[in-house]
Image 1 (tube, rainbow, N blue to C red):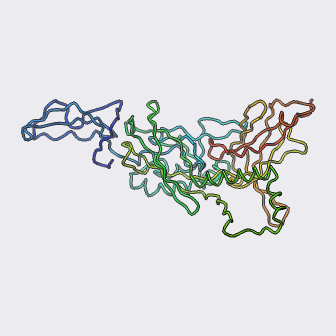
Image 2 (image 1 turned 180 degrees about the vertical axis):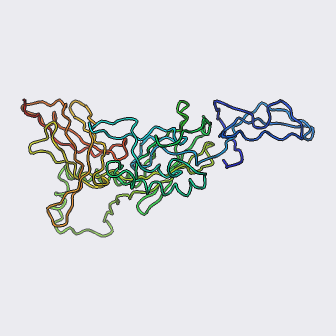
Image 3 (image 1 turned 60 degrees about the vertical axis):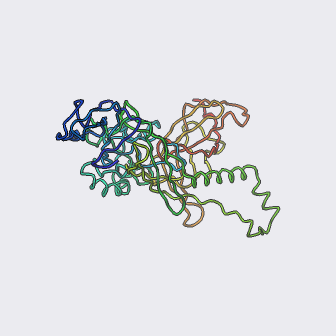
Length: 405
């Protein structure tokens, strides 16, 4: 794909097509080809053949899609994703994508409400300006996003969430179209991890956008798996047994295992190739590892419906920001979606700080009273910092029925 020249994209079938060479079956050698239609991204082209030295041409029964690239008019629906992958994102025209979901006071996801902030690094504010301006301002979009809107409108990492409602109405063009070869590349590198992965893109004819799942970062998966293994050892008491067997902690240096480090938050560039080959940068999103849990603190004896629960750990995000919390009642399999607030408190040691997410236990959860079997009232709490992808630490906490009025 080039900015001015057309490129073939096999297997594509746009809804509205036009011939960009000629509308008649034959043309004379002196006639100029039709100009590219204004504000149109793709057209069906026809191959013309001349057997008399260019005096006349005849259309062959072969069609291809010519695509005029314009990455500055496209954007990604998200600008933040967890590096374990799985988040569904869309690529589409500015002003046409579904806005990022926000959290309401009642603890449920409210569709259609965007949060203020940058547009994820693709074209600056409002998507105005030419392509060069978009490229220059795009990289600053994510950095400046968190400065706009204050704590209540933060995404938890100071990056800002997309506000699609502020985008100008997009022209009815076919910049994106059906194709069997749509590819989306995620590429980025930092000192603690990297990603360079190509995934399939799916065209949605109803919305005119292309969707895909964000791939996982290998370093993040390695770190998460290691942390789960360590949690399992602690739960089984293997760590203490190991210390008793080797009280001096002496180990052969050649056998020492270097645990994987937690990946840093990393800027990842998003590229689109309608023909599956020629990639162009569309946007930038920030990938971050899932927050780590250390413990879940409840009231003594267990949490009651409506009581405050605290998830203690690290990597939650900006203090005062809201995150999505999902509580799963194990025995019934019922999920509850709550809103959690990131807090920071002083620890027992001087200068120590403790990060946590505080949320209210679900009030309408069905709990059994009386003697328990240890499982009936157990719950699992997970959180999400990108609004969709949940952590998977499987850490449980106990709930108890509240006092009857």
